[in-house]
Image (tube, rainbow, N blue to C red):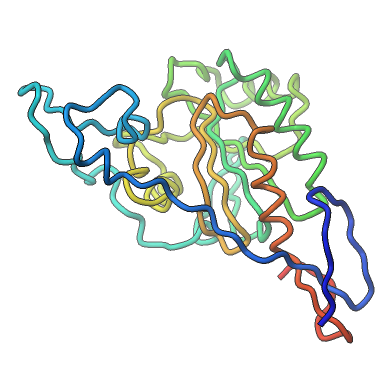
Length: 250
């Protein structure tokens, strides 16, 4: 079996009869044990970072159990491929069509972080779209009312950002109106990450199998997660010799 060393950044790899795959290194979830045991909860607690508080609102100083998962019930489906959503024009989009790496983000065109994030997302998309990478941007007006317009108005605004990746219909990401795909994303992020999305532009990285690998709240920028994207793209290739497999995404 041949051994190849790959650069972290690559494009349009084409080696006849050879597939490329890196050794899979799954990101690990941070431990919340210390947060569970500590009291009172600090403002930097891992729980608070993910939308949870151990403090009772009525009995200060007393620990309370995590909020009920009634609204954020764990989705029955186990991968993103099982969902169908709507695009900005109201047309159905089965997520099963996206077989590569996905970066899913809730966007709001009037958010103060929108310009920088749209710019970086666009550059990442242009850089990796031929390698099986896709960005899905869900419109959302739940944070500061920063996506209030109609879909045609928002579509015009997004054109100003030169976003070529799919812009999807406006959805709820928290509360009773949470879209099924976001119930899945939040529950699949692991452990206590099932909690509330804090603001616009929170990102979920999904692998080729439709599994959530990591979750990135603001102020994490798209460029800050580029290495994680590269790693998952590399994992879509398989190294074989003597023509055992064709050079294609798995």
